[in-house]
Image 1 (cartoon, rainbow, N blue to C red):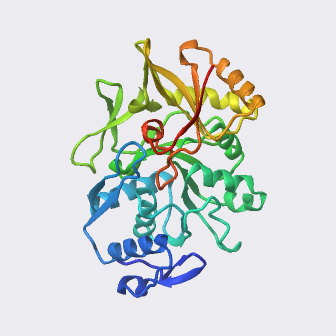
Image 2: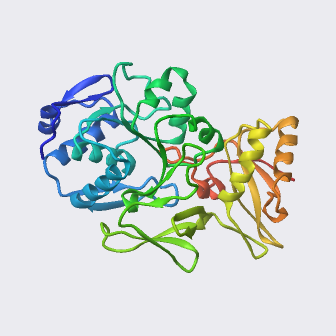
Image 3: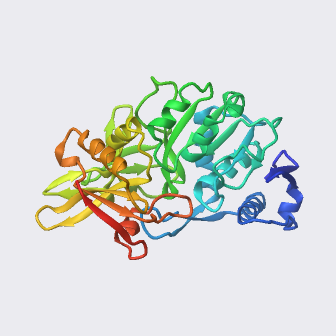
Length: 371
């Protein structure tokens, strides 16, 4: 294929397309190696590409897609965002995984200049101030770092689109991006769907609270209430583990079926409880890495538990945590126990692996506190 630019800019230097395609570009990091190899394979006309899942919801696995599937997915997102050839795309997500690879496909197929930096909390740090950036996909932590730095405000406001996904967009980040002039979209997707199949506009405040499916995507529910995605670029319907409510114009995400807690016959969505705690934690200035999970119980089968990453809790923090838990309106949704774990387990892309953190023998439980 014809790519209109002679080089890409990566990690503070130019690398020619000729060097990439001939195998003469020397990678000095894993990020550069995966970026170079994918670009070379794409520009040489490769017809099949194998993508690796991150393993946040199960064992990592490999899925092979055709070139046409990747092209169709990229085109759909680019068209939905109204992006045009000649703009600059920043690739700052791991190009070993779907989000980073799809940013490369969008740029290569739609004639965007590529700026690439290895994954870090501050993607702008290595990039000269006079470089124009028009389009980027980021994780929530990266976007929070960018909006918190006043030196980046003008650069963000001149961008044409920002995609954010891969983890929950919390209340602090939503408030931070509300004043940005650049449109910011939360993405819904996974490796199996070739990145995003739905977008939710996050700014301004009056933006929709629903994920809007991209053109051609149709949605339904299975018997569990989980989302089923029918997509013309996929040979079969994709049955997810995402519990959603479907509305006329889109859908609301409730949580993962594999994270549902069955306590005394009542189904409790862990992610929904987390969203309630987030409000209280923010009001009380509680700052911990945490998630809602389950503990076995002889009477109820499973208890709602608040898992916190750390070695100890001081008395003031414990008082705040109890106050936050008490603020949850429905008593059955309130955590009954706090489980203190020295260190959570994470995927290579930075997501907490709940199951292995809760069930695995690697991370010792430091303390269990009854609330």
